[in-house]
Length: 396
Image 1 (cartoon, rainbow, N blue to C red):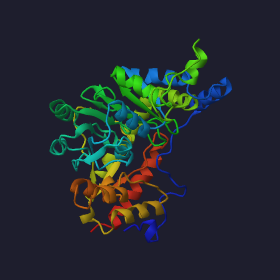
Image 2: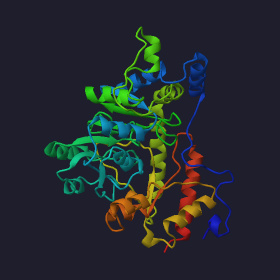
Image 3: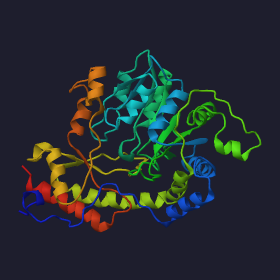
Image 4: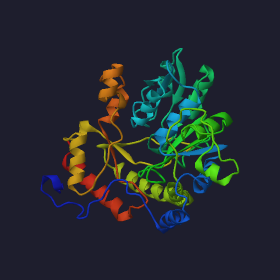
């Protein structure tokens, strides 16, 4: 049997393959240079243009640019009136930013367990966690596949709850013909370097709520009624501070990148779909691996390709498996450690192993493959070869 590199074999690749490298082309460079030469590099006309094109793409009434998805979730919760004494139900199978944003509002995150097959929040578990203090649900569209939004919205209507989506992975995703970003009461998107489009760091909030959009626009920049661009481009030069706001604004440098990236989003998703098919065809032949279940009538955003190790069929655990891949000069990632098992949540909320068994089960087994439109088909084949070699060598 062919030895993996960690056991003395030759690595699959000579040149390292990094995880999630973005595709930055001349259009992005030209856009940034244009902004730098313009003399207006902070929040201004390019940010406004990106907001317009984004809301047109997702089908929302408003889009407000911010400096991260985390900021977007935070200001959305604040705009919705979530605060001290309130509870917000979300998933433990997410990046900690989701639940951290709830804490930043003074509210309490309450976790509901996931469906093991999709790794999205389980609507039945949401319903079981509702109390008199519950004010909102924050579903996370894990890896780019939309949650069961009909069921979640039905639960929200019956219990007079707000739905604010963590759509960090889900730009371009659709649920029953509607784009994510036009389904819940608000949605926060990420333009982090590993997302479907990038502005290096950055994000966007979409909503149809007039009042929330106005509040978010004010809150993202110190609570001022008029930003610098507004004061420079209009006759009125004064502003008022109506809220002790945040420093969450996007710059025009970032927006210039975002405009170029957004124009290519559909081609990026097509490339991701092609690579997802390549991974799926190869990995479904390996009984030691489990792939995420894909739901009908949902267009996957294809932000991540995640495999789940069937550890009972392997002689290595997940962390050893990752070391094996790195020895092949392939760097994967892990999405995610279950949030409730992080020290802060254990120490401050009393969470312990066993509280959310489905999230804990998958968190010990998931590995995220390199997945980016910058990859070549040969890169994807190298990942497939490395995973296959490791799985076969360490199979029970």
